[in-house]
Length: 429
Image (cartoon, rainbow, N blue to C red; front, side, top):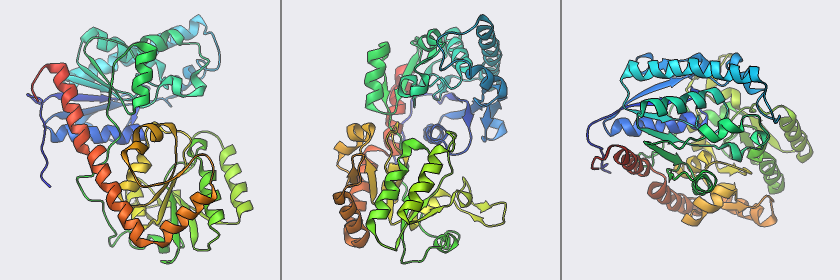
């Protein structure tokens, strides 16, 4: 397939800014995709964050920009869950902000940047001083900005009661001249306009559907054996972190009700940073259900290699080809990368009809097994049917891949990013 590369006149020097560009969190993954797409369009991309894995020749490390920096954590812990802040706390916020502004100016000057892409730091207040610093630098420099928003404060209950509403109104996000605002779903677009009068464009999360997915090779072919499964087992994959909003208890219930010894639930990621209560509850459910669940986060990493015990580490893309069914019973998602990955690898998926899926994805016609907070007998029968019927799985895979290519490919993001740049610079596409 030939690819039409869109350009926006003269190549630009584009700076991505966030708290971290490291690992496999959603913001990092989507930012990397944007970077690859923009580079393919002829632009140059540079990176600034508190935690970085970009090459040093194109990056600027600023440890204070990391949301887990001790000084930042000490301030952030006093901002939410309380209605007021002390004057001394305001002074601390302003002090950190000013130091971060210095870092932002160094980044801009170091790489002679022409466009800035703040990644989520002007949406969710995980690092209030950084959002304030970013807003003031934009106002002072008037450098064109494409602000990429993934999660907003009003989407997270823990930010409801806070002592920084003045800052949230000013910078999360700001309404400034020369800014293009990008959100990842239509619900955010409508809410941003309703709450703040800020217009935005939707660029959904994407995958490189133009490039076929990797298959089994000499490295990953032994994965089933390595995690103790046989070729006859049904590898039912939950490809997410273990956090409450992922609804993993529904995956456990589905496997229990399949009542088939071949059904093995495999959970690829570790627990998140939300405490141990949810994991304890899942362990109780697993024990009560009497099913076979494999937690393999010690065998799954960002890159292939060996773990501390000298055993092979696989990537998530090594696991997907072995899966027979994907479970994605999330209660809430900003978009849904795991859904796209299941479609990309041609795997049937059980998906909870969370709000963004119901509004932006389901109407497109994907063939899935849908549940609405309950694992009904109909859901169980559909899962059992698709696990036993290879012809049906192939039909779903072809249909879903074609829809993914049409709606969530790099070509979609490429076209929409070209339009954002054209709006900023007035150049023809």
